[in-house]
Image (tube, rainbow, N blue to C red; front, side, top):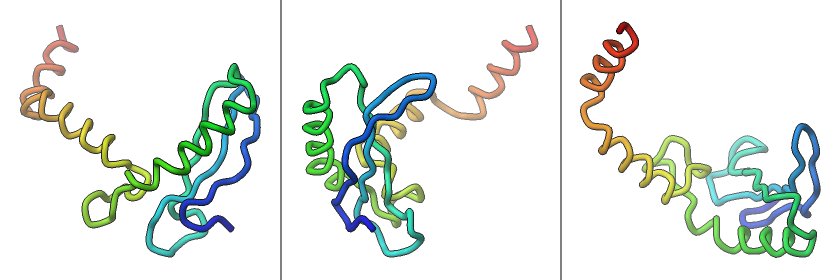
Length: 109
């Protein structure tokens, strides 16, 4: 079982595309066995040593950006920078009802 901030070893997955991957537990309240677990991936084109270095970097960095439940219902997996980007993109889209009506008009035309 992974404790907060721990990760699995890096392993290679192959399906329709290959990649290096590992699991990491972000800080969160105790709960379900998979609570706070995220899967991180990088290109299979990277040498194994570079993939391991990326895993170590993610282990040191990602827990600092994990969101908290009182700020985000998708916590801890929805990292603060991602939540901020989503808010900004929503703000730039403008009023949702106006956007929806414009999309319906465009689709009908």
